[in-house]
Length: 378
Image (cartoon, rainbow, N blue to C red; front, side, top):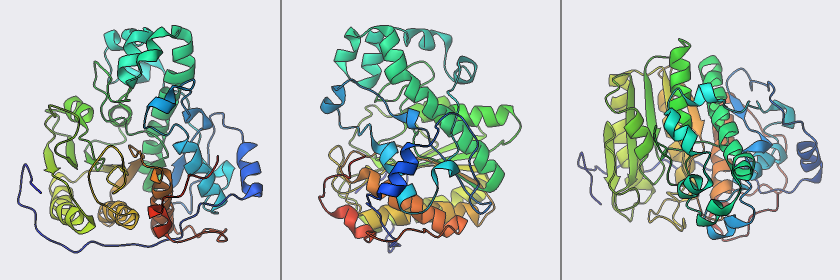
């Protein structure tokens, strides 16, 4: 294992076990499916956390998703599990509005937004050649709209974070999107858009991005390059896409295998000094779960418990310093990705918002994430 910036010290990993629900509660599912997913306010949980989601996050690839590793149902499965596990009622979710042109232009160039009207251009962003043959209206309504709604969700979750301390978006984290182009299944730069909107509205000035997706967030790094108010920190697998990488303010590129202890050693070495020196008002956690040991697109060796502990560590370090936290889902491509993310979000709600899940039946431990079971049907 090598580092671009500093020597890696050893530190024991912090492992956290939590109820890990893969339930199929018919009553909860009925309530979830009958919920109204038009833009609306939800409920701040115990005054300390807000969760943002919309059924419109789901991208319709018209069957093309079979040729891509991305689970287009991941967001819905996480939301259903949170309801079935008793963490939230369907009406507790904050439901975002779709990001409009003015919001997108806070980061993206007019030329890029115009290019997205061409199906052939979108096909390159989504790495789906067949999309090039679809009518532009279909591509916009079935695919791009979902990205815009999710971007609106990141903005809303960021606002809620500044209001109550912890804002969670069940989607987002499109960290490969640049101001003038999209790539790597990332169309809109949702985190930079949220940061710029909050800065414009005077809600925040200094921000720290903690990107723990296994791929470097080259888009976010490029957008914020030279910006003294926004610090970008990335821990990623060095020999993965993107090639070449952008330059974050702090990059820790690691070589596999990387287990829980090795990963936590790097995180514990770097994060506290960054929080103390940069003093952000908002910490953005890109909580990708493609660091999981069975992720098909990566080579790290983290366990489900290790990822849950990783996310808790970041939020704990920020909250104990009085800093707000925005969590966005980011990547994860194994069959267990949505389960691990559900486990982590549930843990954050328990630890930092005092939410006690009301449904415990059929809720195995987090170790269930490591088993090769098929994903629950939505």
